[in-house]
Image (tube, rainbow, N blue to C red):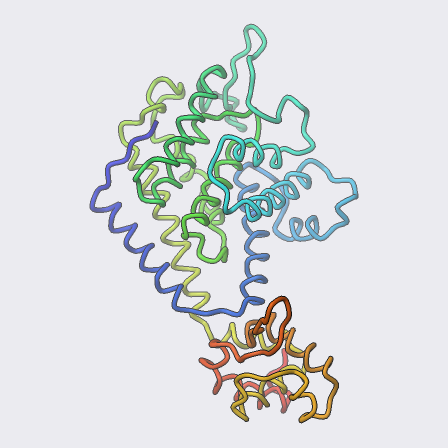
Length: 372
């Protein structure tokens, strides 16, 4: 198991990431905008993580594959794309579950879905005279010889126990899981993708997912050679000759934290453009919905019952409810529940915070100069 001692350099990097996380929490993006950005980010991560593994599809190809009929026929590179995206969705559903061996197996099964039965689940013994190893795709030379298959279950149990019981900082835990999954290499196929998915899952679980906006995998994919060199740490190819307990684990940890630092700073820059995010949210609304919001703000109607407002505006109750539902979807209004039913609506804190900007935008929309 990899053991980490925090140096001043590692602490500085952690503090920078913490600062970016704290600054991000001061921004309040509409739910609809966050949902859209997360969807785009999952697609970018799908492209980047598979690119690291040599998938030949371009980012445009990935977009087309994910938009195709799921019941159609897919070539192997296309199936890999769909599998990874579905694995991200799976982890989104399981974000409140504990890290476990069962979760590891579920993620890998999703990553290699459609492959032969032998590639799903933990690897077993090789035929006599055959060495299980990772080979360089260009030269055919051996890059890495993982631990024997019989050691894999125990190593995974140790990893799960580490995540559940260690006092290490969550960022360190995510880095360790990434390294250990690649190094233990418990599967015939899908080890790297599973490692990236699980470290991302832990970052999200521990509050370092940065709203799911942006793609950490893109930073790993920017220079795959640096990524792999950092994982290998200049150690011999055989697992038992140093990779089981690397003498300088800070090589990988420093690299990992540096990538998270760059990623978190980029996410922060993107959401600091509040005006752009506000404009994006408003642009998703229909004209009457925008003008209804402006009417509420101009007249300081910060809480209302649909029926009463419908009478004033001389529209149907259903019309006001429909407008309100869309404004709730993008974070401009919030429903006020009474039992199981929505009785009234209130203007959200987000709308209150940007009231002047919303009203100014509506003037642009009225003239047609603000429509995109």
